[in-house]
Image 1 (cartoon, rainbow, N blue to C red):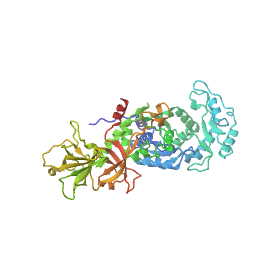
Image 2: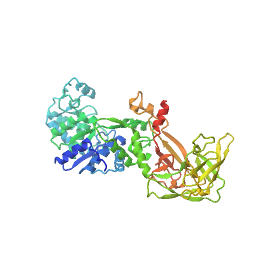
Image 3: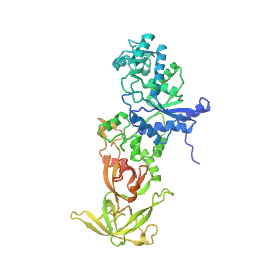
Length: 554
């Protein structure tokens, strides 16, 4: 009997809330700002919020926190929706903070009328001085004691566009000596004369995150508002605003973000990589964005498994990207179609093979009993990997060498009889004898060999472009090193090679996942055309990165 998985702290809270009757159903939300593409860190939040309402009665909203018009675009909105759906989740409602602009404005008026908000003419630099320090209390703004009537008129004038950006803000009137710096009269609204991707030029004042977030949760009756630990100091303001407005009491809960080594997940840094041409775009297969991982060949199942394995906690830590790659290999091993592709070919001529050739049957995936088989062409001339032959091999070398025998995958045993070289001494052709009685599945030869090689038929091999991707950074934490994080980019994160593939890869589609036998896992790239097929390496067969790093260190 398998051991039941223990509950995380959020599941414990929810089960207690449901059993006590506090809620009969729970409501969560995933609230991204549409100012960039989602990355692997967001995947944890997506899996958490949507996962909870799959496990417990309730639903999850997708709400775009679109309160900053200068950085947000419809392109990002569409990419976020695509990513969430690709990960396997469906939201109950598609919502936008901008949907609530009229309601949020009304909330602000309500606070002004209660004497809990005022229009301030202080500059951002002056406000920073007024705030004091964590050990010293702040001082009141000279505009703090404006009358309610004056504040209402000034705020209405702000909305009407009478003032330039930065000249006025609306601040909450709380306590300038509060131990929590965020409670020292925080800004609720600022002026931004900027075109909004949804509301156009209707508004020129926009709510700050802290004012829009809790109120949006409340409008939607969100029961468990889940965010990361950096928002712990914001919870007091979240609760204060809900209390003062007398609205639905949503509650904020925090969990620790999981950082992944050998990458960066800051949107600002990712945007730098895109804008400066270090990558080809947000969906470059080396990027930690969900769209980049998808293009590289990651599966939603592997990402969900990774998020489940790392779990949630209240303490931040660094997660080894090797775990993500492990989850991916585990899934791909079960589903990937096996195909043979030679990257650096040397020709093998079977001197005793006669006839036009034959079709051999080979399995698509030994891990899948229902995977079926496919025909592959075999004839007198084939290609094998140049690395699979040695003229003067060491002991216990089980690949091809003069006088030695190997099995060709799903075909025959062959013996190398003669090596042809050019004037530079480079091997150009191997003359071999095949053993007719050794056909795979029908072997009566009695010969036992230890090496099995992959190969392709020379006459009809399909030429393809193969993009060998590796980790984008060469150090574990690029942001923790001296200098610019871009100084630590891995110069070998992409190598492009030509491959010679079995003909069946002509039928490849974007959804397919392949294991190129003895090479790694691959998928068709979106740049492919029927005339020029391009395959991306998703991940190697084994984790060779740690070994490479160890060798470099020594």
